[in-house]
Length: 105
Image (cartoon, rainbow, N blue to C red):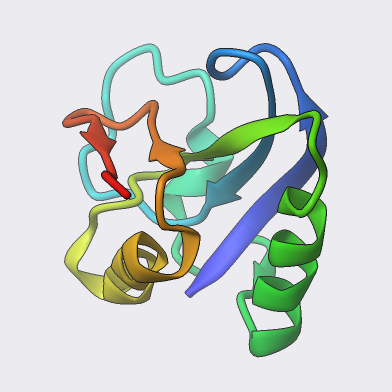
């Protein structure tokens, strides 16, 4: 899986101050998409264990309300790894997807 950007402090994509992960790859190709560059599954950088550790470190601050996962399309079949974040992040809300998912504690 690749990602296009990680915003360390984001107030535009969810409630409160959040970390935002913009994943790459989308097969929907919606008309008037604001982020066409992320349609390509190879766009950006590889999502590695180091990337995951970096995100976890960013989330480890009292002022961070959660993680927003945007795209591309985070629920594309090719990105099953992102679904494991439900286990890693516990009570963090994963949002701004076509089907929003809230993860319970």
